[in-house]
Structure formats: structure tokens, C-alpha cells
Image (cartoon, rainbow, N blue to C red; front, side):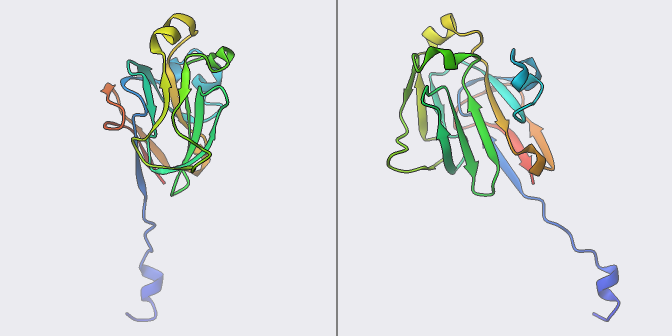
Length: 168
């Protein structure tokens, strides 16, 4: 290399790709179709929703649980490369004050979670009858740090099928 090599050699920035897996089994729905403007207008972030058929919510990634709401209807998780996710079961389900939700993951023991670990069990029959919607948004809340999102479509199995690819 000579003195001019540094001027003509472009340093390439490596793009980091992270797959986010389905936290619940069901069919992927466009985030814009969620009947709550907080999600459909992407106020809390961008992502997808799932119309669930399963009764468990798993961790979609390896990471750190930030918070599980006292009502157990939603939780936040951060990947080890700082992608912040928010998983929210249904619309207006906070109003059930925890009815229909059972927390499995014990934040008292640890906040470290592996992809596929059970976080919350659901009484899906009760929630289908009672909730405004059971669409379950999975959003990236620090979307300003993301270059691109690839959104998957179709039916997914919790812990197995990817729902998002995040390019950072």
C-alpha cells in the first residue's frame, strides 16, 4: 500500500442482521391493521402484529427483559446488540388487570432470557371473547437506530419462525 491507498480504499461498514422470531403462534398481520393508533401509526415503533392461535408468549430473541407489566399483557426486551422490542398482547388488555394472563418468567431470579423461553401463558378463549382485539404487536421501539426492517408474512410457529430481520 502506498500513501494514496487510504484515499481510494473505502472502509465498508459492516451491516449487522438480527432475526426476531415469533413470540406467539399465529398469522402475521401488518402493523397498520392493528385497531389502535399507537401501533398502526407506529407511534411506539415499527414492526408487525400476530393474530394468535397459541396460548404462550415466548422470548423472540436472546436478551435482557426490561419490564414485564404488572398486568402481564406486555413486556420489553433488549437484544445484546441493543435492539429494543416491545411485545403487547391484544388491544386495551391492560384493562383486564391481569385476568387472562399468567406470568411464567421470574424477573426476581434473572432478567436474562433465551429465545424460546416462556414469558407469559394466556387464557386465549377468555381473551378472544373479552378483548377489543387479540392482535399482538411486536415492535422495535428504538427504530431510529435501525437501517432497514424485513417483515415476514404468513403463519408462524412461536420460537421457530422468523417474523422480522433487522439491519443495523
